[in-house]
Image 1 (cartoon, helix red, strand yellow):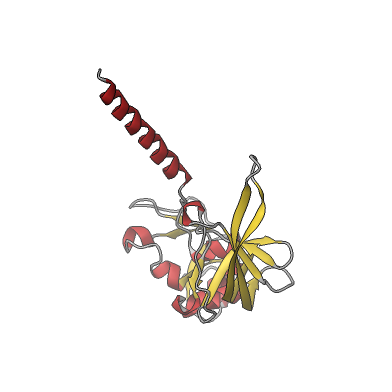
Image 2: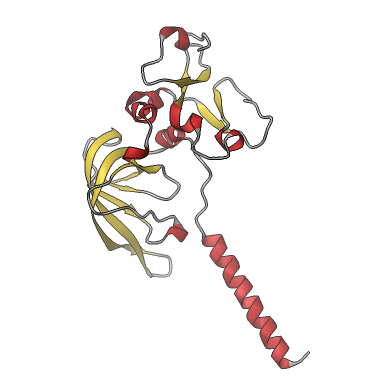
Length: 220
């Protein structure tokens, strides 16, 4: 085989390996219902972002500095978290490693969920539930204050294909992706999975608190 052809093949092989490594490092997140995201998070706040800077965050195993983006935030309300205001939100510097980009003009309010860090700080990724506050439904806003917490012992199961069904009484079947062809459809925007008196779980829709009949197991 001519040397020129060998050189081309070697170059192609290197490009394939480089692309495979790049794809392997790309951020990938499974869809999560807002309630499940709330329950999984250490911290859930409503806040404005007022500043941004790149900071060093230790070193990797090779001694290279690890960079993170630090967003300075003004907390408006905490729905879940420590007994102190969150003042800084950290994330990876690029989306390829799940870094989050937020508007820093201080005008847009966000719902931010993520993992707690010491000293009034938290870390977020693209896999966390982070949304502009004004895009949330009234049901979602109400859920953050109480409703979602009532269902943290429940399990929201994503329907992978139709037909699908629950496998345990403490499950709620999430069908938005299959039926509406979108992740955040009717169930994500308007329903919470609530635990009943008999320890089973069921979808509940409404801004007002669930009635006793619902909690006792009567179908809504």
